[in-house]
Length: 223
Image (cartoon, rainbow, N blue to C red; front, top):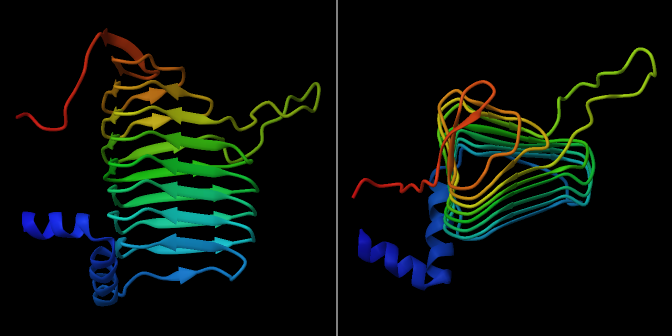
């Protein structure tokens, strides 16, 4: 198996052929978009994954060596972009954009085992490389519904971008709210709600999440 994987990595043509055969065998994903939008994915392995794009000028770019299992990619708007770097493994993950000019990007070699990632109001969500997300993850850069100040009539809950750095680990059931930056090499503990910026090389836990340890690093495997 290792020899086959190495061979696929060396030959982009062979990778595309094997991915095409795989997707034909597991023909249980649905593409629903018009010719006014673009989906680019070569050498990508899909299973139970759906695309629904409503609007025009939208782009979805999925780099080679990606595996998407039971995912949902949804865009309702115009001139929106979704980019997924190479060699990611996404399972039970939804990438959701509403409104115009929104964007979601995921860096290469990242894993997600159950996340809802939602960008609205033209704002972005940027996720770095080599990130690891557990199940029950919720990342939203907006509140979905407007809230107004009764005295001024002014809206008080505008969307704001989210930036997650490289090599970030989100434990199960973590929620990341709008306007947040999570710096590189950090860990967010199980069940935490991130409401303020997170420093690099640190562990944050709680509701709201607070720093409990700094000067740390982490690895995916114990050995």
